[in-house]
Length: 167
Image 1 (tube, rainbow, N blue to C red):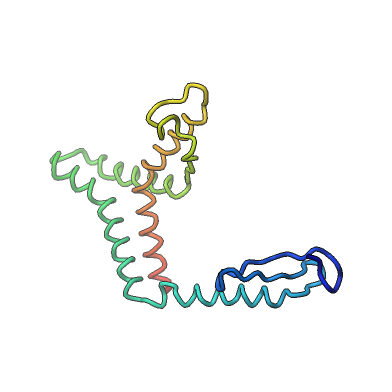
Image 2: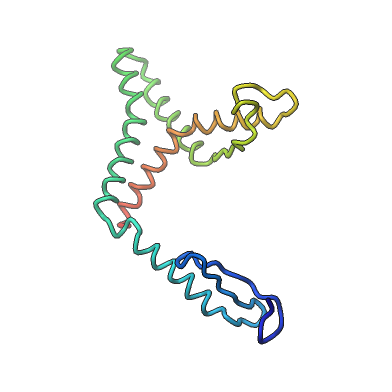
């Protein structure tokens, strides 16, 4: 379909609020753009109405859960190390915490994204000898699983920072 004003091809925007409704607008002259903008603003308003900030009890429950997991993932192995091994050399304590800071920093920086369709034969159970991508994707999946506790700690730290900022 062409624009009735400038005869250029029109673009279509599928309205997510009213399913099945197509909004046509011209990117060249702006014909119909106000309807597309209204639909986008309606969607934004609906998403803001259903955001977590409108339900503070869920927001606080999520924050407490994130704080608890972060504390357990950071201090749990340390307490197990101290209680099970007994007296340790003085250098072990700061080394543990520096290692955890480095691990959480790596989990924050690295974001491996394996292609789950290319893990090998039978969902990654058998190596595909004709492809090197499955080896890379299995490594990325293992790295993602390894970094997952650090990402949970990063999420908890972000929630603490957001709470302190008042968000």
